[in-house]
Length: 161
Image: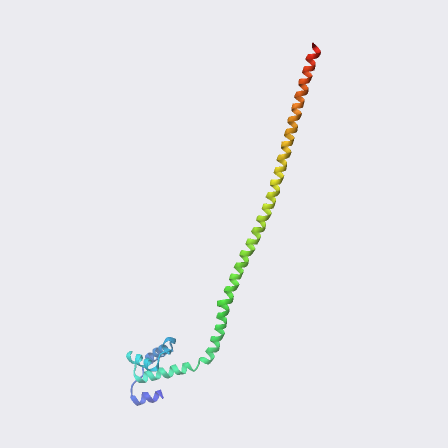
């Protein structure tokens, strides 16, 4: 049909403008517009009616192909769901488990340190008590020794008299 338009009207179709128009018509934002508004825009850009018709025909041919691309889009959508939802979930789960493991291991170490510190404090306290008792015992022996020496000297003085 496009060859009939070219031969009947005698106007030469500029393929570069038609290709640009097809790209324009395939834009998802443009596809939502009405055909009249698309034609008005293309006319305002300097395209002739046969060029617009050829661009619309090529666009219609390209729109018939989406059956295969829709299956591909579904596969990509499923893949994107996997990538967008499951992978971050796994990453965040791994980070959370790592934080839990780190907290658990450090809290266990801190508990062990506290227990050993308590045992050490108890040992130091008992050792301090033993040292004080030993010092008192040594002081008592020293005083007894002094007292015996004093008694011996008093005895010696009394006997010499």
